[in-house]
Amino acid sequence: MAAPKKGRRSPGAQGRPGRALAVILIAIVALTGGMFLSGHTTPRLGIDLAGGTSFTLEAKNQPGRPNAINSGNMKTAVNIMERRVNGLGVSEAEVQTQGDRHIIVNIPKGTNAKQARDQVGTTAQLFFRQVTVAADGREAPDTGSGDSAKDKDAAKDKDAAKDKKKDAKDGGAKGGASKSPTPSPTATTQGRAVTDGLKAGAKPAAAKADPPSADDLTKQLAALDCTTAAARSAAAKKVANANPDVPVVACQSDGANKFILGPAKIRGTDVDDAESVFDPQNGGWIVQIDLTGKGGKKFADVTEDLAGQSPPQNRFAIVLDGQVISDPPEVNNPIPGGKAIISGGFTQGSADDLANVLSYGALPLSFDIVDETTVSAALGSQQLQAGLIAGAIGLALVVVYLVLYYRGLSLVAMASLAVSAILTYAIMVLLGPGIGFALNLPAVCGAIVAIGITADSFIVYFERIRDEIREGRSLRPAVERAWPRARRTILVSDFVSFLAAAVLFVVTVGKVQGFAFTLGLTTLLDVAVVFLFTKPLVTILARGKFFGGGHPWSGLDPARLGAKPPLRRRRGVPEPATADTKEA
Image (cartoon, rainbow, N blue to C red):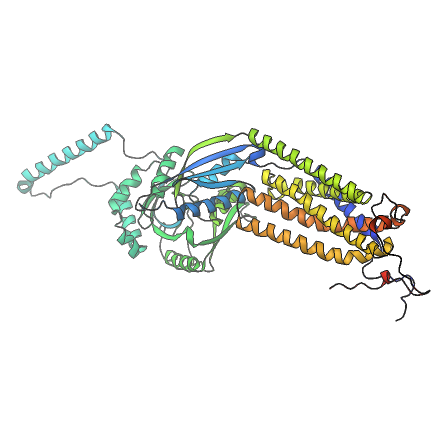
């Protein structure tokens, strides 16, 4: 076997440990610098540490659905609410059921509580309905209220009865036709438009639902009040609780118009995804909707029907939770492709909210917020203090053990722990504004558990080095021969820990996810620290006299380790320690 050329290094050796140390140093500087430049120097805390807001929502009975409040619908509502809250950039929010009809939502401090309240309580019942009649919503309703309205109606009926009696008495003698009250032109026009609209867009489902007559809808439209926000809210609740298969009267969200709308042609379940985008042509925000396969086909059929009708029957209204959210657009041509656009003077925030609600689906139940309280962080702070004390005690015991057992090598372990702590802290701080990560008590527990995982990696490597020294090798060859075996063990151990953390993160919710996330993050950092800091540092220290010469306080003294006599070798033949080391 030919001797290796001078200067040739084995595959297990690390020729330039300074480069690896430079990489980890650059990473530390970049992360800490980014932390200070972002203006965030402390982690974002969860509700148990910083406090927050708690909402209690109660499910309501819905007309025609006596058995809607059940465990399946409540579980679905919890999942949708949690996705909505996380869609706002909130992490570590708690959404859980309480009893048979209540849901508790806990939002950490620093979140827009009003926005979160609106998101979790919105049912997001989305319907596309054909417009049959449109009227000005800024005018006061024609009908009165209370006893005065009843008196007026009674007086009109009395006058009509007198006229009828008078006509019956002298109609034959005079030869004239009997007269009856002539309806106003508006009522006549509206009645005809409603009838035409129902005929144009009639579906078998609407007939099954026993829709109201055209006259009834005309009267409801005349009596509909859209002039105030309170009136529009009351009207929206009535529409939201109505059967989607029957015509309704509804207000536009800003009160500019009011409409008679036909049965729902497309529903929120036909929406696959929604996204808010800025439209440069109109200079405003819009919401783009992607429909499902069936929804896209229905949308194409509906727009084809509407395109052949005259105004206002060629318009369709987008109704969200009982209100028409934008000015109904006219349909002049069929719209295939399964895509739609909602516009209507959106701001970026309102467009984001609507897209968020539509993306994560409609709640299967309607809810009322029955309680809203502010959660104190006093109890969490006490638990955090107790946890930090326990962690400090555990860390101190680990350090004492390392010093007594590994002596000089304990400095390498403590330096590695310090590097890992700096990286973990900086990343947690930056993840707060980045992805909404919030540090809670389980996350702190995961960071404390990671101390043991990181220390275990150092111990594996140190013991491999000591085993090589016991075999009679000097420190520098021992460092390089021990690394491949230790590396394999460390990677397997960290892979198992990361896999457990990943599974725990996927199958759990709430605070337990914080524990899993922190455990997985620190496990990845352990690999980076061992490869880029611990191993290069040991390689450099092995070249020095204190460690390389086996000082009694270095932790690598051959005499204390019971080393065998040095292996004999012929002149010109390299020491076996420098031979190629093959991994299994």
